[in-house]
Image (cartoon, rainbow, N blue to C red):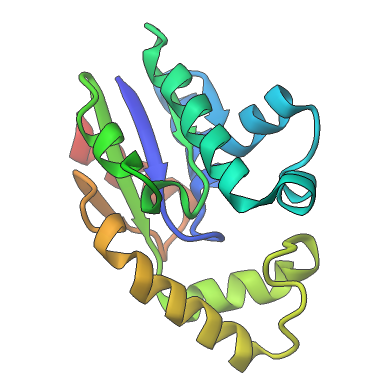
Amino acid sequence: MKILLIGYMGSGKSSVGKQLATSLNLPFLDLDTEIEQKEGISIAQIFDSKGEIYFRKIEIEVLKNLLAKPTDFVLATGGGTPCYSNTMQLMLKQPNCAVVYLKTSLHELTDRLYSQKANRPLISHLNSKEVLEDFIRKHLFERAYYYNQAEVVVDNTSSIENTVQKIKKALL
């Protein structure tokens, strides 16, 4: 089975995905890393030099190529991946594939991301926790329609181990 993890930035897609993949003896893939390898530059550089429209075009192309592979894997998508074009429908219609939304509270996301903001270009300019919280709140409101279409919704406010167990229980 291909397991596609979706959720907002900081929701734990990579951390949970790596541990989930290990526990299921599957390879772990990160969509952003796959895009960077294809393009030969970082995501930030793609946005800066080629723009978001180009990035989204490459993102769906790389995702389609991964989904066409016969092998199973756990994939951490980008926070915006399911929200553009027909990407969410593409993921949901794949055979032998499960879309899992790592639902994380606004408070938890704000705490996690505030401590990481220097490493995240999209939010590095937000200079207070309150401004960051408003930014996240707006995005969560806009993206909820897409995120909540996932076949499995898992609360991710506890430990990585607990979240992995919840996903395995829901899927197996």
